[in-house]
Amino acid sequence: MQLKTHMDYQTICRRVEATGMSCRGGFHPTQADQMPAAGQTVIIIGNSGASFWQRFRRGENPGDDPLEDWTRAELTSAANDLGAAVLFPFDGPPYHPIMQWAKKAEAVFPSLYGPLIHPEYGLWHAYRGVLVFADNFDLPAGNPAPNPCITCVDQPCLNTCPVDAVSTGTFNRDACAGYLGSAEGRNCLELGCAARRACPIGAAHLYSADQRHFHMRAFLDNYRRT
Ligand code: SF4
Ligand code: SF4
Image 1 (cartoon, rainbow, N blue to C red):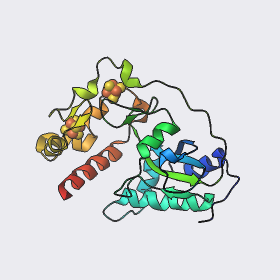
Image 2 (tube, helix red, strand yellow):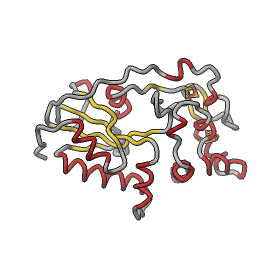
Image 3 (cartoon, helix red, strand yellow):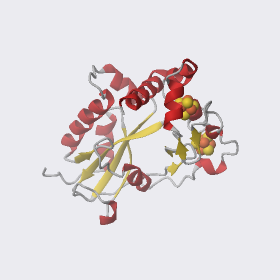
Image 4 (cartoon, rainbow, N blue to C red):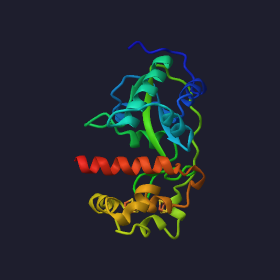
């Protein structure tokens, strides 16, 4: 693909926001970043809060992986409009090191719960794609916020799970899925992971009950398929 030049961060963000997703910072890649698409500026795309979910839910979205299909369609369209290449976290194996790239693009940190934690969104966010531009353009200054886990005294994410599936740096997938599939696990299945909900960071960005249930259902279905 012939990539366009003379792009700027604000224009990209406006186009991405039309999908319900948002720009989550960017960086100028070096060889060490192992970018599979040639380009001089990388923008990370993610979601937080409800706008993305409302837009996804308005579509028909059939298929085994409706969220992946929707994400691919939306971001491919945006990338075509912007003259960018697009990469997805779910394409693989091998998978792109999007978590490493995200840490270069904005202030996110490994959490005691497991996934990257954002100082504002807490655990209620995700990365959905990467746009790669041929042009080298300016990026906004990063937010130098610290890792919230460092000052979290009670660490409720580690002592809330009823089957102790969550501990520092590890996740017992079998224990979690077993509980979710049981009658006792309906609370987690319907309302979302109790350990994740116990985290005090980013409460204003809590996913809707519908979205939390969707993700838990998808996790359980995927577990049973593999
Ligand atoms: S509950 Fe505390 S330790 Fe656990 S992820 Fe949230 S901020 Fe970090
Ligand atoms: S979904 Fe429930 S069982 Fe699974 S890790 Fe979270 S709290 Fe534990």
